[in-house]
Each structure stands twice: as structure tokens, then as C-alpha cells.
Image (spheres, rainbow, N blue to C red):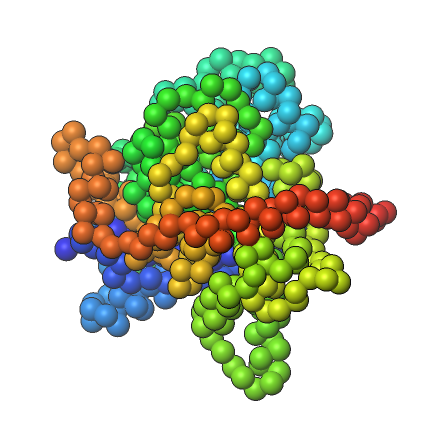
Length: 520
């Protein structure tokens, strides 16, 4: 029986999922971790990544042993995914030159602006090329020692296999692609601006289905220090969470789309023709098989509401009413459906970090209520869920109005969709688009990269990723579809207008709390 392992390093959890040839999860494990804000950057320590991988894998292996009675010794394929893009530079000896700078940082506005103009192509702040050029502009000493620039997924893959590779979706968020490799004309313009031959530092671009090395003995020990897992496992190209989300929702064919909602929120729509212009709000990336896609990405989604639910859990615990977090999330999210259509006049801004979609380089989570608002629990929760969707909605409306790109259905996955239809219902109303959720929505990118590993191992001659997913993985899959309710749609538009006005309060809060002397 074929077994395929997917490991994803997400923003709040490192997750491992094991699937078999039916493509269903047979074991899983997870480890919580959190980003740090150090020296002006959002970051994670790489030693924490390995601690988390080992913890998640140990939980998965114990789950497998408990289920089957057999230790997990051999795999037929595996893959690594992680939060997209960012900046991880190394010298020729493999020494890390600077702390990992994640997608969450909004410190590259100058570089992204210069490169976007030079490329005539939107180069987002979180992309690796923007981070490198900003480091060059800042005259950071480490740039002169740079030998290899990669992402978190690329780093883990490199450490496990010795191969410097990236899947097409992940690579397209490091530096724009042209066909199956980095765009040579844009690379030449980058060199003219900086003197740096950026493509010499980047990983090799590989398409879905290609082999990207094998698990070394050292790599096997890094995952499983007990030595039970054997080396020699073939690995698929490492991907970012956008690419694995596309696989996990069967959204790789032209005119399909998905939305991922967790710490950040983003939608990917696979295009059937290029966009007519470039927009700062829209990223043009690639699917794991190389098809162009439009990505609407917002830095902020569920972190603020997670913090509030943590506060509620603490209060319940103080009263002796211990509730499991999944149950608490479910009850509170469902309560949001009982609220006034527009959230009762309440205001919330969920910016834990900066938000490029609205021009904020830093954020302060902020809740406000006018005296005549209706301050109820239902309205409070509805306001927080609507707040998590505002930036995404702005980008989706731009795509529809300027480019006529409006998918007939979006398939959701990620933590926000684990609850019973609440976020799904409100998102359908906010976007005005039916939203589907599959049975595996909560498994997210770990399941998606496991599917890409299975495709690498099981694909038939000439079988595309699109056909593999549609005919072999999702043919019998079940999903629930929620269509927009006019009440929710009208209520969100009222909330959205109030939110735009309220950003003036957010601007003042950022100036007051984050721009004071002594703060970064």
C-alpha cells in the first residue's frame, strides 16, 4: 500500500499528514508555533522549525502505529510545504546570513515599488526578490556573501535532500517566471539596478510531477530522530501554501479558484488569459503545473479573532467552565449568523501586522463601537469575521470590475473553515460568490503537498495534474456549497463602507502606538 507524507510549516501550526492510495488521510500530527517580532521583522527561528517537524511527525507516527499496529518505516513519496515566499539567505558554506523574514513583513515598500516599475509587473512586498533588493538598498553587509536565497519550504527541502529546488508556484513568488524558468529580461533589469545576478542565487524551478531528490540518511534522522523512518524516499518539488492550497481544493484548472483563510487570507484564480494590466493589489503567480493565476493576498485574517477567542476561553476557565477550543470556535462562529446583517454598527480592524492592500506598513488590532451601535455577542463575532474578509473583498472586486475575472465558485480551506458553515456563509455573502468546502478543508496544505507527492509517484504517462486531481482524487469527494444570502451580501456592503471610514482610526492608532520613539 503506497504511503505519502505531506509536511507543512504554516503560520501557527506545523502539520504532518499521511495519505494512502485512496488519497484519504490515514494519520496526522501537529505542533503549534508562533512568529516572533524581533529587530523590526516578523520571523521564526529555524531550530524551532525542526523541533516542530519532529514533534508533528512523532505524533503522526504514533497515530499510525495505534491505527495499524505497525511502525511507520517506509514511504513511497513525500513533500514539504510552508508559508509562501519571504527571505532566507545563505552563504556558500550553508550559513544563514540573516533571520528568516516572513511574508508578514511590510518593510520592502521601496524595493517593491522600484522593481514593479522596472519590470512593468506587480512585484509584491513579500516576494523574495523584493526582500533581496531592499537589503541591497539598505546596504546590509550580508548581501555581499549571498550564495543561495530560498524560502522556508525550499530550505527544509534542501536540508532533507541536498537539492536546491522550488515548485512552480513557490518559485513564481520569489522572482517572476517566464514559462518554466525565471524571467530572463526581468532578471537582467534586477542586475542593472543592483549588480546582483539574482537567478544565480535562486533554486531550480520544477513542475508538479517531477522528482526533486530523495531523503538522505541525515534528513531522515532530522524528521525522525528514533531512526525508524528509512531514507531514500523520493520528494516532490517543495511548494508554498498557495500552491498546496490549489491542489487541496482541486483548483488547478483554468477558471477555477480557491480561498485560503488562516493567519493570512488569499484567493487564487487560475487564468485562461493574461491580465490586461498590472495592479498593486493583484499578484500574478503560477499553479504547481505552471498555469498563470491571479492571487489576491491579505496579510491579516484570523489572528485577531483567535486572540479574542483565547480571551473568552480564559474567562470561561476562570468560571470553571472548561471548553475545548474547537467547540468554543464553533459556538462563537455560529453565533455570528444570528447578528444584525451589518454587525450592528460595530467596527473592527484586524491588522496584527501591516496590510499592503490598504497601505499600512504596521498594524494595531482595533475594536470600536459608536454609542448607538448594538453591542451583542452575535454582532461582535459577526464584525470580527467580516473584518477578516475586507481586504480580500477589495481585491476580488477589482479583478471582477477591471478584468472580468469572477469565478463561479470558490473552494475554501484553512482554519477559518473548520467550523460548521459560519465563515463559509459569511464569505459567500461578502464576495457574492458561492463558496464550497470539502471534507478535507481543515487538512489544508499538508494534505495538498501529500497529493502532489502522490501525483509524482502515481501519475500515468501523459496524465496532467489537472486530470489526476479531477478524475482520481476528487471524483468521489463530497463538498458543501453555500450560496450568497442577499441579507448577508447587503449587510457586508454596509459593514465594508463603515470599515473604509474607520481606517482613519486605525491610521491614528498606528501613529500613536507604533510610530512613537523607541519603537521600530
